[in-house]
Length: 305
Image (cartoon, rainbow, N blue to C red; front, side):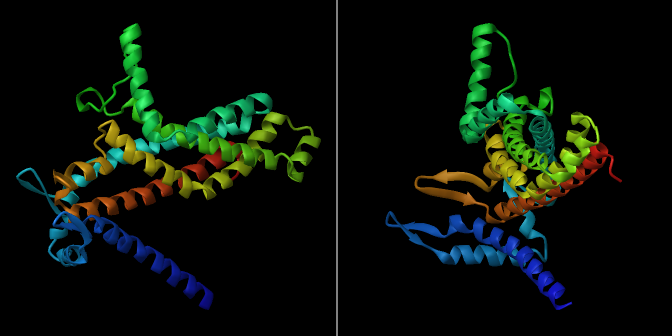
């Protein structure tokens, strides 16, 4: 009982640290000011902004922000941005995980080693560079062959899904899940239960799907926090470079609404907090989605109840 209480207390402290960390992270731009052209620490504005946001929870002013000359409520406008980011992340993550697991389970020998080298190389390329490469590839193909492979920026009038950010967001989960699945499949093939199944005359395809595949799913599920973290890191870059109207791009468009030489002007602290809390919520929802999907897929593939 005492151990359960201690674990519950630790989990509660961790969850309380998340909003506290968000409040502190959003206040970082307010910590540095300039006096006579010399940067110096200014903790006063940062502490005032945190106190104002906490006090504004009572009357809802913590969720108000300005865009142009109009005041908006974040809770009313955020769902559309949230769903845009959720759609891209879930679709790209599902493609990447499924593709990586299938390739990791089936690719063997020289083909598996070559594929591993290719995906490791792609995984090592920064997402910013990869996004530029994809955009340049589309432009060069259009100029040379007259073929338009995809749009290089979001256009709401021609469809909700943009191929390039979806491809960019899928590459890294694909490479990551392939690496994890290939290692898990290699370890599982040496397990006694696999040797026993093969000795009973079961086909290698059945054994790899039902027995080796069953060993891959728990490993992927354990590593889900890493996958969702990779998705979120790439989501910031993809939405910004491809003009996708998601929750992370909303932060850069509205929270930082103007600039003056040397520093920011009209920084909306309350909106930065709201968006970052929305990103945390998006992380949790994605993790729950992938966790549930993996468990359903495992039952379907292995035939387990």
